[in-house]
Amino acid sequence: MPRLRSDWTLTIVLLAAGGALAQAMWPVQVAPVLRLTIERNAEPIAHLDQPRKIIETREVVVDRLDLSRDGRLRHAELGDIGYAEQFFVTLRKRFAVLGDGDYRFLVGSDDGFSLRIDNRPVCADPRPHAMALQPCDIRLAHGEHEFALDYFQGSGPSGLSVQYRRRDRSRSYWFGEDSDLFGFAREAR
Image (cartoon, rainbow, N blue to C red; front, side, top):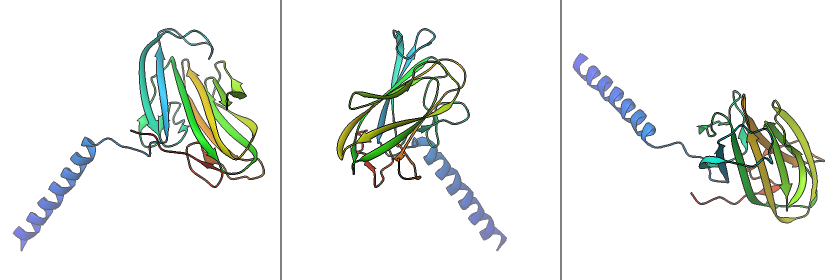
């Protein structure tokens, strides 16, 4: 009987090790909803609209704009997605508004950002600053709209998040998260 017990123990240990190895071989993936272009700048960034000298670019696809953890541009499942400092993030996304109404976007950023919808400025804070939440209000009609967000990180802590809700409701959703208010098409991988 002791021999049988040790064979089972060894089998369980080998299965667990194989499972951990298989998980490490396949990268973590989330629903492909928002495609971010992240560009590292060759020089310090002092303002969102300064001339860019891009030295490296990457694209990252995330499920929602909830990218602020431990002072880093970090996703809950994907981990760090930005560079350490001196980078820009650009997001362009069409989304469906499911009903006319007054909406509020709550943008969290460290450092600066600019938000436009249908090429209309909604709100901006284009200079370096510590993590802050800014409410951005807009009236939207039922139908498709274009969301345009530009963000930069100079030095120090970073973070970016966007939530949305109707102004007459208290429940918020992460931008990229489907709800009874907005719908988001998935991106190709």
